[in-house]
Amino acid sequence: MKGPPKPWPTGLAEQLEPLVRRVLAPNPSPFTYTGTQTYLVGGHDALAVIDPGPDNPEHLEALYAAIGDARVAAICCTHTHRDHSPAAAPLRERTGAPVIGCAELALDVSGPRLDAAFDTTYAPDRVLNDGEAIAGAGWTLHAVATPGHTSNHLCFALEESGALFTGDHVMAWSTSVVIPPDGDMATYMQSLQLLHEREDRIYYPAHGPAVEKPRQLVRGMIGHRRQRERQILRQLERGAQEIVAMVPDMYKGTDPVLYPAAGMSVLAHLIDLERRGLVSRENERWSLVQ
Image 1 (cartoon, helix red, strand yellow):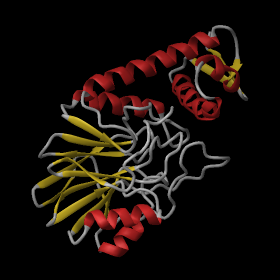
Image 2 (cartoon, rainbow, N blue to C red; image 1 turned 30 degrees about the vertical axis):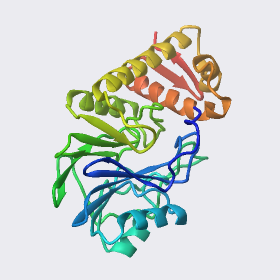
Image 3 (cartoon, one colour; image 1 turned 135 degrees about the horizontal axis):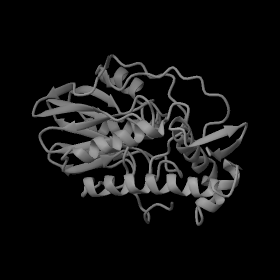
Image 4 (cartoon, rainbow, N blue to C red; image 1 turned 90 degrees about the horizontal axis):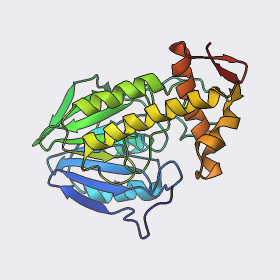
C-alpha cells in the first residue's frame, strides 16, 4: 500500500495529546508504511519511550532531541521485530533507563524472513505480564498481552487518557502480517477479540495513523480474517492446491512483491484450519478433510 503524500514528519516530535508525543523513524517500507513511530509518554519528570524503533543514528538523534533533559523512566517494547526494539540498547546506554516490556524470543527461523527479522540484541531488564503496570509522574501504563503477530507481543494502555499503544497488532493502514512458526493465527484472533471487548478511546499503532474508532476497526478486522478463512476453504473446494497457486487469486489487485508475505498469512490460516480438523496437507499441497 502506498503511503500518504510527502512530506512526512520524520524526526519531528509531534504532540498528540497532553501526555503523548510521537517521533517517526526514517524507515519506510511495504511492511512499515511511512516508518516506525516511537511514542514518548509523560513529562519532564518521567518519560516512557514506547517502541524505540530501529538502531538508526538519525532516529536516535531525533529521540535524544525530543527527550532533552527529561528523565527517561522506562523504555518499553511491544515486540522484538528489528523495526521496533533495536534502539532500546543505545537508548538505555544513553539514559540509564531500564528496558521494560515484552519478553525476549529465542527463535530458530530457517529460510528468508518476509517481515522484519527478529532483534537478537533485545535484553529486557523487566518483562511485563498481562495486567502488570509501570508508572511515572502523572501516567500509568498497563501491559495488555496480545500474542499472534508475534508470540511476545504486548500493547500498552495509558490509564489516564484511555489510549492504547497497539504496536503491530492493530493498524489502520493494513492488517498485521502473521508469519509462522512464531506468528499464530488462532492466538491473533483471540487477541483481536480481547481488544474488541475493551473500551479504549483511541489506538496509537507503531505504523500509520491513529485509530479513532477502535472497536469498529477491530470488528472489521475480525470479519476480514473470517472472510479470508472462507476464501481459503472455497479455494480448496476446487481440489488440493499449493499456497503459491492460491495467493494471486485471493489477493487480486495486490502488488506481487507482497505475495510472499500474503502467502505466509495464508499458511497461518491453514495451520489453524488444520488444527481444527478442516484441512490436511501432503508435502506442500493442502486439501479439505472429507
